Length: 264
Image (cartoon, rainbow, N blue to C red):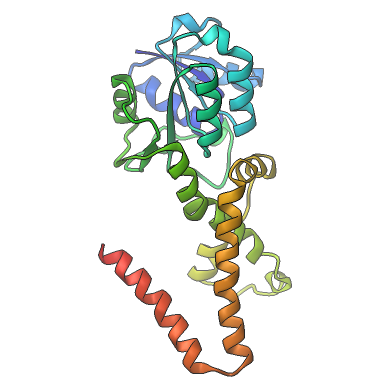
């Protein structure tokens, strides 16, 4: 198996480190030459100069750069299998269809609070979920998923992926980032525990990357943000009116939903 990596940041670098340890022949291209050279040296890889030299191109780029790469290189790609690990899928699927690219969408549900190749880990995907947004992936995709150590494989469409990921990931980052903007964040040392740490963990984001992710999933995010605003307002109204019955009902409603989800 010969895998060509376009981009070796946190996700691409982690995949490269794992696959190279598994004996996969890896080829690398990254616009940052020093990072590319380091990745090649550390993983006994080769610089990717010709797409024909690999079985699959794995794009580990930001949304905008993923689209730009396909736009600029579609004629060179030809019938070569292209997979991406971008956090939004509908826009990538659309441009792949536009140029009749042999495309498979992947979204590893794993990451870290820090990015870049130097923070990548060969065991990053051990036991993690991976979402596949192509109906019938070719065999090489299953082989790569297995070698990377993923646990559960989830199949969906690009459109459904973006709708769900808006709620399960992107909204969480927005809420966490917003929560940190309370002035009391500077005056709470010694008062924080697990709840504070859990809620603020994903609030620190690469603004360039996450702006792209939010922008490419704009309508789903607007809907999810509006939903949480409505629910928060119910708590505010109950508190303002000293309505402890309503407050208790709101708490129980949310707790019941979470308990039922756990049972399922």
